[in-house]
Length: 76
Length: 110
Image (cartoon, rainbow over all chains, first blue to last red):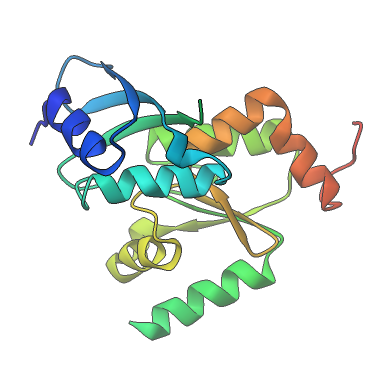
């Protein structure tokens, strides 16, 4: 089931309010996205922890409703 | 359920480099899994592959084990290193090679 980019963005914003988010729909099918996310919440966290924070923000949708979201995270 | 967890824990701790993936290293059944095998092969890292498609319990179990929602998952010396995105980023920056070489699993300079 496709998921709209703004829904992904809203969920991430809810958990990481200061996040700067750039989402690209890779295949134009609403199912394969790539996201660049910058947030001060990532400071001092490993990459695994940073991605886990994003997955948590997506409330279990990743790997289910959301098939593919390539992530790149960084602290400002 | 904890039986699966114990099994995974044992595999992760008794193999220097292990990749939980869809398909096998010889025949990956997902583009993301295939990409990670190619990077490991390129660096000539010896590793074991575990095909999560062989068991639904394993497929779910590995996600619970690492609190990570997707496969592939790469473990080095008992530690979860990342999924496809992180491994790709580390490969491109040279960090993957350094990390694995530091643990003595490949030669520093091939």
